[in-house]
Amino acid sequence: MKPLLSAFDLNLLMAGKHHHAWKILGAHPLVLEGVEGCRFAVWAPGVQRVSVVGDFNQWDGREHPMRCCGDSGVWEVFIPGLPSGAAYKYEILNRNGHLLVKTDPYAQQMFLRPETTSCVPSVGDYTWQDAQWVAARAEFDWQHRPLSVYEVHTGSWRKHPDGRFYSWAELTETLIPYVKDLNYTHIELLPVAEHPLDESWGYQVSGYYAPTARHGTADEFRAFVDACHQQGIGVLLDWVPAHFPKDAFALAKFTGEPLYEHADPRRGEHQDWGTLIFDFGRNEVRNFLISNALFWIDEFHIDGLRVDAVASMLYLDYSRKAGEWLPNQYGGRENLEAIAFLREMNTVVHGYFPGVLTIAEESTSWPAVSRPVELGGLGFSMKWNMGWMNDNLSYIEQNPIHRKYHHNLLTFSQMYAYSENFVLPLSHDEVVHLKHSMLDKMPGDYWQAFANLRLFYAWHYAHPGKKLLFMGSEFGQWAEWNAKRELDWSLCSFPAHDSVRHLLRDLNRLYRDLPALHQFDFDGRGFQWIDCHDSDQSVLSLVRRGETAQDTVVILLNFTPVPRYNYRIGVPEAASYCEILNTDSTYYGGSNCGNAGALSVLAEPWMGFTHSVEVTLPPLAALFLSSGA
Image (cartoon, rainbow, N blue to C red; front, side, top):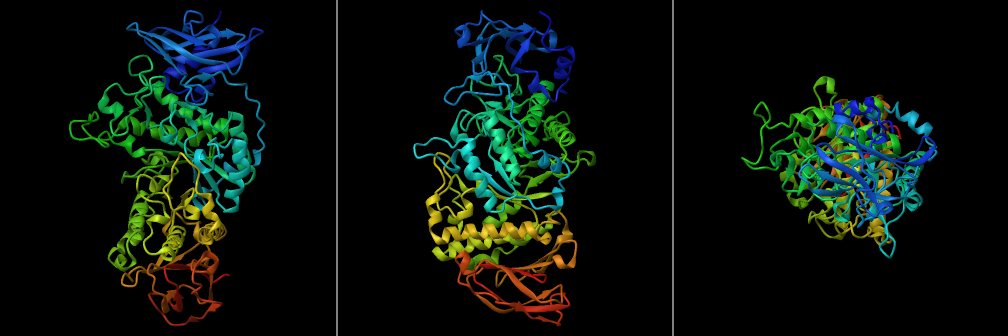
């Protein structure tokens, strides 16, 4: 039989430039010379034999040995009559005579855990209905458009009473309307690639090319994404190229020795996490990961990848003591191979799919993460602003009587706010591991806790940067997130909790509708302090601007439970102002202290502005004022 894979494909794989490797490697049902069957191909260099094993041959590696494709390290075979849905693995006899049984790294379907078996996929015939969305995405001016993200762990957003997961079809019927009602622009899904352990939340991946079987088939996942797009909601996916688990059935020591991971444990193992680090210097490994990024975007129309644990990739000494890490060729701590990989990945993704986002979870001061590769950056679209998150959560957790001593935590972010294209994340990581839920972080009695939370969410939307909030935080869940059970939905029957959800709905609506709140998220032209020095009263006042003067919004935030009457601030316009949002409204569970009707503007200079206005500041509350309302 003639070779199944072309020399061209094999050469691209060896060079690390086969951007559609999932179409070549793995299991593919097809018709070969009039015979129906399945073609298998796997990269396993330096071994004596590779066979396909499964129920169809009693797991006997002698039945279907594969043919080696020269020095490419790729093995191939065509098995006639093998149907979709058949279970299979690869049996590998390595160079030392040890026999291994491994799942397919390129498997596009896996069986539900605790099974660890690959599955011959069905031939996809899904018909997409989102052509208009995909065409518009290519022109998406994300730097100047609203991006408000609802972060979801699909396994625990909701569960059936008997503990079963919701299917993609059920999530389509429940999650999409919920997110649309709250006016979010995007859903971000924690990793949906196959993983063996629920408690890993999907971050320890064993099947990089297989949507998890927990929620249904690949086509059912496509239908979910399609439905999101038809409702005007983008879909972001968490992606994990930094490390992978040590499970013996998967990538770890795939040929009995390091293959996907770096051979030197000083570069190939995260001791803190108990995981292995990809060998970013190896062509075929880079090919595996870059092709995987493209796979999710191409096959599932994903609108962006939030790349996990980027900081751990950039530094050779990440979470290591002296003597536990190996310097680069110049004696430095930078992981040059990982840096080159990230730049290549971003270049390739943005080249194939204009408008698709790549977002780095990067927690250090590494420069130019979200700047173009050609300008020396890493090429990401955006970066999570972990500094803003840490400083501001530290501030809001303070007793209001002490906040005046920590005022700088609120204002420091303006020193670097435009050095990157920032997302302001209030993510899953902040509501687990004894960090408390968002509501439980708040000081004070019951009323003050909710008031603090409403105030903090208003500050989240007042500050420049795109927005992200983890599920359950929108209605003030008291308990920390637990991936083993669904959110505490019963709390929504209590007015105090449901009122927080009303506030998020309105904040998202304002953020989407008012250019001043999103147009210059990454540009200092969109922000100006009115007064950031009133630490004694713990008050901030600021202006958000769009392209025109009519887009101006004035925002005041009172971080104490003391109402401030006749509080005077400078304002940029001579027109009258009125409240367009007050977090102390009874509609949100507040005391209804505020400013009814229009506010009279005084032609008296104040705080560097030509006009001024006197307002009533409600306790633990934020005011949004507009001159164009």
